[in-house]
Image (cartoon, rainbow, N blue to C red; front, top):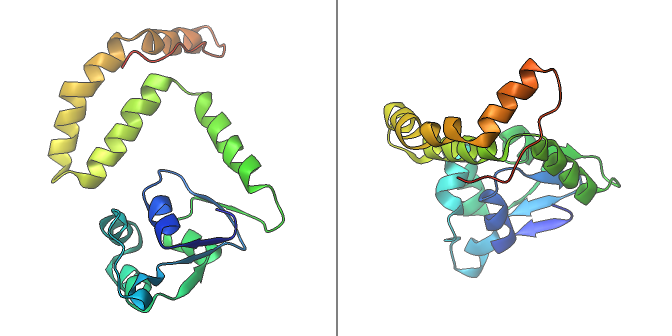
Length: 162
């Protein structure tokens, strides 16, 4: 996020897994000032991420909040100093992720999302254990990760088959 992030842009960010923002970025949901309400999925997600009162504050006042506050509140995951290359910082995060097994990224992301949206911990654990983990451990990337660890070398991942 570089600059002003309002309305629909803020809604898109609220639906992201990882948010990299310049410290000078500004976030706002000004819809109430125009007689509308944000309905692209951000309300339940922001409530879960920021909490009820903070989300109410943003939605009902339409006020602007800086990136440092959004970092403290948990929406921004990486805060970049003003004047820095925010796109470069986002690419760095992607490069960190690319060092990991694509299968583990898929299952891990699904597990986090499921745990966030599921009705219970038990439901999440059961779904992951029964529906996802068996496919993960049968895949070439699982075997490669273990073998690379044993051989003390970097793994050579293949495209996911999940």
